[in-house]
Length: 294
Length: 325
Image (cartoon, rainbow over all chains, first blue to last red; front, side, top):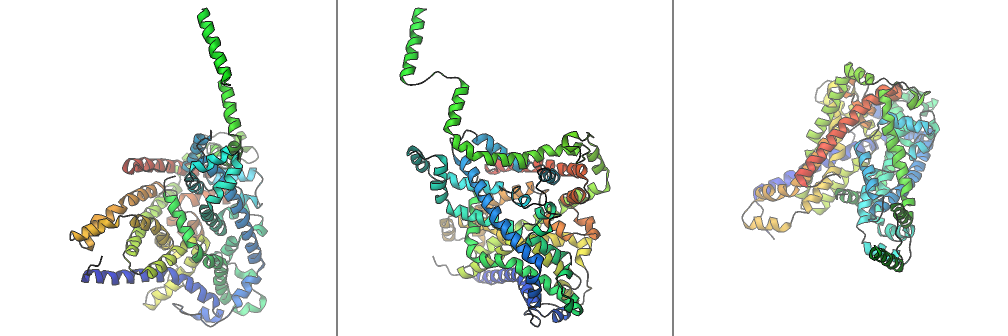
């Protein structure tokens, strides 16, 4: 259907493209600034005033300090461990819960659903949860990061909605052929739900990658177990870049501490930025599934 | 009498032929359990998780009414009634943290709620698929960046030698450390929140927009409606239900949002505007180890949340026949 566009519409289109371009630029520029600053020459960056449109000078010193810093390396290692083990446990527990709740013949279905909804409405709060983790003896251990967040209730509901959409005839015919629930879940339901599982892996995975608060409160005395985000916090928010700097940099100490911050940010967000464009459609898909009523 | 006995005997034989034993409720339950044993085995770890990590902390909130000491445990600590609540509400902090929590979330709702709707409407009017895709990809990105990185960038940009001050100075203004001035905190918090969430928040409205029947636009165009009339009579009514549900749910969450960013950005100079209930609970509870007092403050917050969310849900059910549960 072609309708001649009025002058008003043309003006609107121009205005619209302008506004959206501005927004895109405003979203992107802080990241670009970080990229440029991290690649800048520390002394030149220190004297630079205003917007950066390219690195001020060029130096990889900051990256060198960052990747040689032992806390960053151990932080990276720990974060990868938390992402992999944590997400594996998340998927296992969440799909178990989603499967039993999607079965109409499960005798505890109603009680369990009530139990889960109540947990969304009211929670004990930070202090009782902390005291629980402490009395379970999980403080300063990796399990304090992984076990208390084993199930995200919202994700459980998304997954249950998706499992429920699998036709009953499929699971029933398998049951008649003598398959038990474990077989039905692993051989029929999960293979048919790979896209929702992909979404869940991404949600949980990004959550673990970005998580820092539980590590801060539960791993107070276990610094060697700190995830990358917590190390990053020390570097960029607490101004404690001193450990990173070699004595030869003494003169430019102040200057390089700035570029180190930016390089550390880059090191932490690069994996997300690298995979994000390829996985974007799965992330968006999750919003759609979640928007359906659980 | 014999007739009745005969009848009973006959029923029994019929039952036996059908292999139906007369059974009690317990036996029936046992059969159900046996039939569903795999489901029960599968549910067990999930139920255990919810009991341990959600219900035990709910029990743990009773320390809010006790004078908890770790050596005596939750049960053994002496009961003090509402003393901690009285202390909190009698203190100078109560008003401050409640006001800050409500104001920060209120401003976040006021400016942050319409932003994704406007973005979705603008995106929906784009003709170039490529440009639309590019804008979407880029504006969704900040959603996946950690609070630490966002706050690190914010702290750097707003520092007295940061980018924002460079620009202000270039226009002849005074340099200021924004994060040390109480009057700027809410603006910083809300604007960075919008910056981070506007793209991601627009997804759901874009979905609602794409769900509008295109024949409606054609019909109104034939009837001579311009773009603006179409917007008022087709587009807005089409996404109104989504807007209403999300608005209600967001109002329900007004006391429970934001915590990480506050803890990362605030400092003693700006507690006056930045300290919210959850950051106060964290500081008093986990840094100063005042467990019972902060559990009481946390309980107050949880109860208010419960009331808000239940109300929001009830309203949503009435308005839209859609509810969270």
